[in-house]
Image 1 (cartoon, one colour):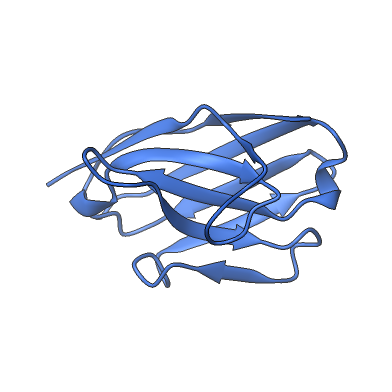
Image 2 (image 1 turned 120 degrees about the horizontal axis):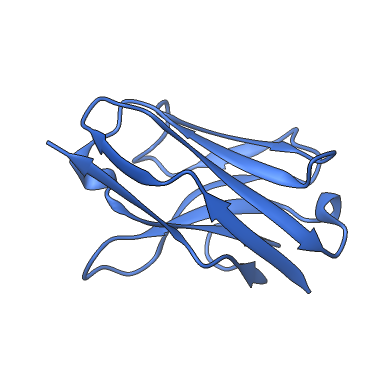
Length: 118
């Protein structure tokens, strides 16, 4: 089992930045590819970004490419999502995931709300 706890969400104006963090515990964090997904009201959960176990490979949804950056610190068992140039359409609950691909994951956090005002 892997337990994931997100933090760093909040309210920000369009054009602003936020940094989400996800602290992992349980099984060896560095064994897992880690990802971020999001779910806006009335919409299905969607893929945002994924990072390989070593941090050497990343992949992003087209909607966030060039604005968001995923990173990880295996010594701290933490994965991050730096979000810049935020838009109102980025408003969603953001979920951290372990054992993640672009569609599914093995473990999920409880989510953190990000709201971008226009």
